[in-house]
Every structure is written in structure tokens, then in C-alpha cells.
Length: 302
Image (cartoon, rainbow, N blue to C red):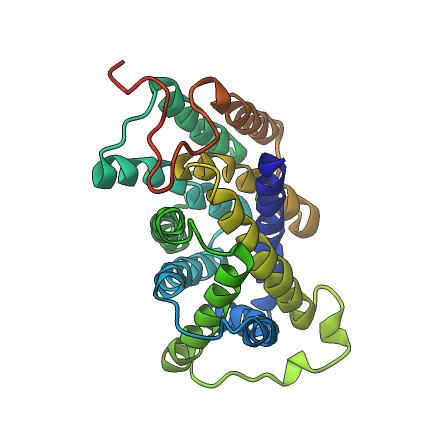
């Protein structure tokens, strides 16, 4: 059941690429990302006050800074590259997460696990039809966001282990919204919010409808699921399952923006799904103890 919730979160984030594109019609990338969490923070604040959790949490603040940095870089990247490519380069967190765990915590992983990660990235490359001639600045921003997302996954594993997932994530959303406002003002100036307050904006692909989806589902809903599941599943497994986000991003790009989804791309999606489904052969999904999780499979030189 935990895997189902993770996949559901990736589906929501996959559609989040579409909703982000809708907000970029009226707002620049920085304000698009900041307003998403301003909405989420406003929705979260009454609950946090009721729960007496509207206080500074250092753990949630650290995760918020990593999340804000990653999402800002990703949002900028989405503006300059295709949904499929943004989905591809974002998934490099599946490489960065175990690499960082190996460097920081000296963890070792089964060779089969690394093979499945590699196969998944090949599948994602196929999903993008191996079109590398137009590598651009947007792709660089997406790669930078992938590194920050990997750090965010590890930080959640380390700092939110004994936290209430709802409280922790609502604090995270509130902090990202608060930190995002001065950042957006410094970079982009004062935005024109007039277009948000109309009935047309409330109907997809209107900006208000997109922000409501991003705040309620992508920010409050999906990230709460991440915190909850990461209390029970090791971070390198979480990052691997999150690879299915690229499949959903490409699918929604094809549905809503007529982006190409070729036969080779469909084959790549199949490779990704197959690789993720084979992960249980080389590692356990449950944590054996709190704190950093050691893969119980054979070490890399085993």
C-alpha cells in the first residue's frame, strides 16, 4: 500500500509539470513557484495554529530551503525545455541519492540495484527519443534541481523520522511560501496579480486553477505522502520509485501540449516501470531502524 501512495504522489507531480506550464502564461518562473507555496502556506496556517505547530521547526526549515531551491531551479528549467526532458533530467536524483548516501553515510548497495537505476535512466532516455542536440540552459537548471531534490530526500529521511507527516509538511509548505516571497521580489519585482481574480482564471488552464492544484495536491498532498512513506522506506528506494514521475510527465505532455510520444518513448516508459518493479529482488522496502538505512542486499563488491 505504501508503494501505491508513492506512485500516486509521482502521478500528481507529473501533472504538476502541466499545471506549472499553465501558471507560466501569466507569471515568470520565480513567482510561479513562490505563489504555489504562498497558496499552500495560507491553506496550512489555520491548521498549524489549531495544532499549535505554527512555530519555527529547524528540521522543517532545512528541508524547506532544499525544496525551495530545487523547485525554483526546476521551474526555471521547465520554461526553457520540454516536459519530457524536464522529467528526464529531474530523475537524476535517482543517481544522486544513492551516491550521496554512499559518500556521506558510507552505504553500499547491491550491484543489481545500480543496474536497475542504470536501466531506468536508459528507459528515460528512450522516453525522450534520445534527442540531445538541443541540450540547453533549461536542462542545466533541471539537473541542478535534481541534486537539491536528492538532498531533500535524504534530509526528510534524517530529520522527519519521528515527526507527524501532516504537521511536518504543512510547516514545510508554510516556510517555503514565506521564504519564496522575498526571493521572488528581489529577483522579479512586484507581480501583477489582477489576472488571478477572475472566473476565467479558475477554469483550466487558468492560472488560479493551476495554483490551486499545485498547492492542494502537489504541495500539501503529495509531499505529505512523501514524508509519511519515508518514515518506513529507505531513501534510495523512494528515489527509485519516484522515477515513474517521468512517465507521467511525458504522458501529460503528450495529452495537453501535443508533445511527441513515439513508439520508442513508449518502450522507454515500459523499461522504467519494469526496472522499478524489479527493485524488491535486490533490496528490502522496509527500514530496519530509524536513521540512515543500510541496504540489506549484497554490498557492491559482494
